[in-house]
Length: 156
Image (cartoon, rainbow, N blue to C red; front, side, top):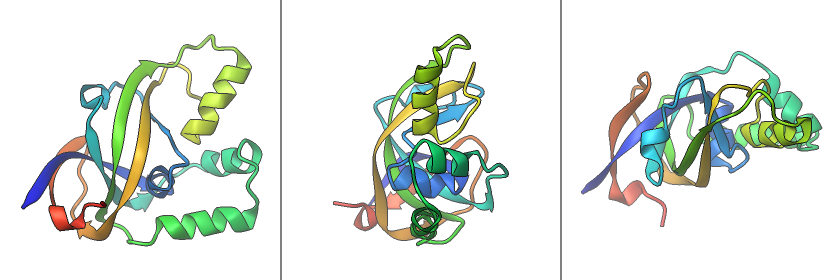
């Protein structure tokens, strides 16, 4: 038996940061996750890396992590490799980040998103990340796609 879920591919290091509970806000230029509010979403680890280094700056400055802590976190996010469905996360509310937020509020959101430049983007709250017991090999796709996860792979 299996559970059919919507699935979204995340590039590294963001996939690992989501599943390790550090990235709790997903950002998109359109409300991609809004229809999945209050649903469980599967997290696929894409083969490619994220091209920017904003996440490293946020981890260092806003989260106060040192190089060793960041490297350990990155290694943890690679435990299942690439090209796999690695876990699940609960999807919360989606909203647009206003361009006029006070700096302190914007910095708090950037800390949760592990990304800067959030103004006018669609933000979605993510919670309760769980790694699968084993990776499920699957080819990633654009936007949200459907995946069947065998029940024995789901965390308890």
